[in-house]
Image 1 (tube, one colour):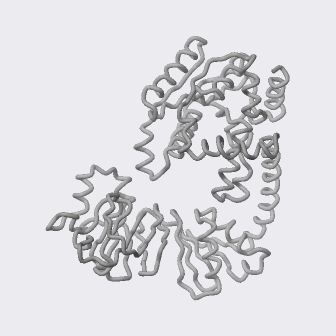
Image 2 (cartoon, rainbow, N blue to C red):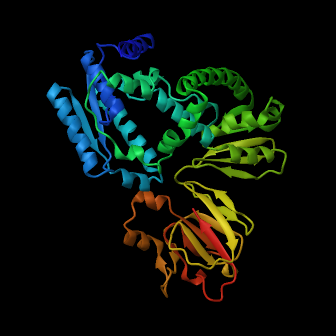
Image 3 (cartoon, rainbow, N blue to C red):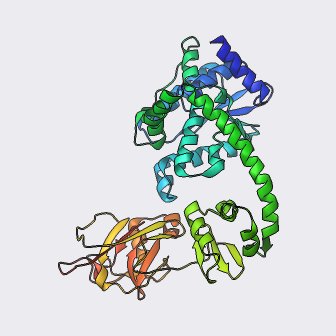
Length: 440
């Protein structure tokens, strides 16, 4: 145990993570990792302030975590700051997973506390095992070199002192270094991607390499150095082929095509504007085609115009329209990904995020656009039309939810208000032979 504690102390000093004369914020959930770090820093006389987020996701268990941490800090006269979030509402309102919503909420709050109270750093309890999990998750999701860098000991004002230790090493320490903590029941639920990786995937790697987490950490360092090396030369290339014109970025296509691995260079540019590798590949294939082809991310549009790709920020005032042919199966728009399918399956779906309408009643191409004031639809089951704005009032939608609502039109008739209601005129009937499925 003494060797592991010394390893932790040396890691903090050698990486200049923390000093005892600075005032910093420690994120504490109440679980094993964060409570170990809190006890270690408190016992070693660091000037720590605890920040705890109650995400209100586990009922009495969440309340118990908060009470446990408050009592711990009050008994030791440790300054503590607590906030309670309506995480589910935030996730739905912003079209985020619960995990991503919780991450955004806590880090935004941490940064605001630093500004308001003058904390120099945010300290988290991520360790070497978390790093291995993160690298595998990023590899599966396809985040490129950046994702393979894993978790850094220092990222801006965020520091992670436990990155020198694995979960197993922390458990070894706890056999001698006693402290109380709370078990989070959600950590055993396989429905969460990270838990699935932790419980079912990493043990298989351990069978091949008993130092798997150490190896992954070493790989992360190598990937980080490689990424910096590659970016050094990419920056030189970007300066040659990109220029700024008003609010747009212009990519010179002939100069791009002269580069070694031009598709990789293009991806390095457009990924910063939210475009994924699949869209970038399609964009690259269009370079020698006719002008006018456009590509959308959640925030930007790229338009091919003769010898240039024009990268333009989509403002909240703009209302882009998308055209959907009968043969299209996929479309990426602001806020959503759309799937389209023609089938003979007339089984009714009770899910507003996936709908079925009568294919024969549609006139292609369809148009997808944001809803506008004055838009009307004949809701399913009704004889007359109703303003979409009135439907929003009935549904008690927030302004953010309204801004993310789109409509599908067929010859200026609204077929579907995305995620909310379809037009009764396009519903499936006993006479329906061909079904058109749409999902977001």
